[in-house]
Amino acid sequence: MFIANQRTLFLAFLRIGLFGFGGGPAMIPLLYQEVVKRYCWLEEEEFTDILAIGNALPGLIITKMAGYIGYRVGGVLGCINTVLAVILPMLMVMVLLLGLFKRYQDLSWVYGMGQAVVPVVMIMMAQLTWDFWSKSRSTLGGLISLGMIFVSGGLIYFLGVHPAWVVGALLVAALAWPTASAHSKEPRQ
Image 1 (cartoon, rainbow, N blue to C red):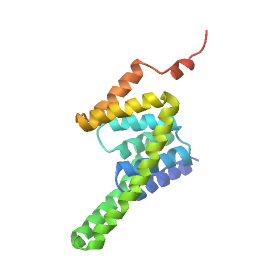
Image 2: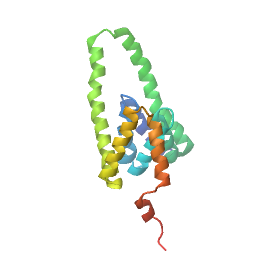
Image 3: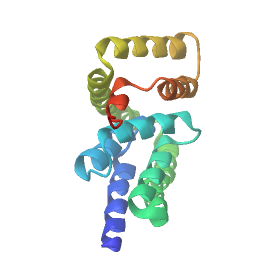
Image 4: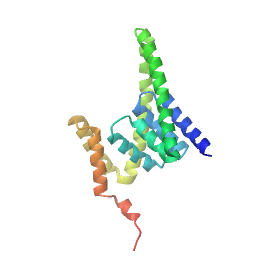
């Protein structure tokens, strides 16, 4: 069972590493599909929390999330397994593609290949955005969610505040002012 679980972890994260063109933003929807929808290793709320915390920490989001999820599902070996599975394809493809790109960079079809991936990544990000919007609206309400979107967007895009500071502030606010749903889970006296 342990070996089968490790193999499943490796293959799930290998798929993410192989098909996650576009880096972290493109990999997040694939990661969500594998760990929440396909294997049910995490609940949707847990995935959102891990994504928020991972965004606030330095480094590649996909390796942080892979390491945590791997550890949670398969212990230390699972952590190593998932990080290797997600990194190895990227390393191999980068070396291969950079060599090919250097050699054929002047050809129009090489440029076109890179541009063809952009709409696919855009659709994947739109789907993830819609899923997060739906979750936020159902837990916080539409008005609060919209307010958080506009304030966060204003801080990041107009004032130049780093997204990690915005996420960190939201985490502190969530700790300081827990939601009503958290209070409803407390035992009644």
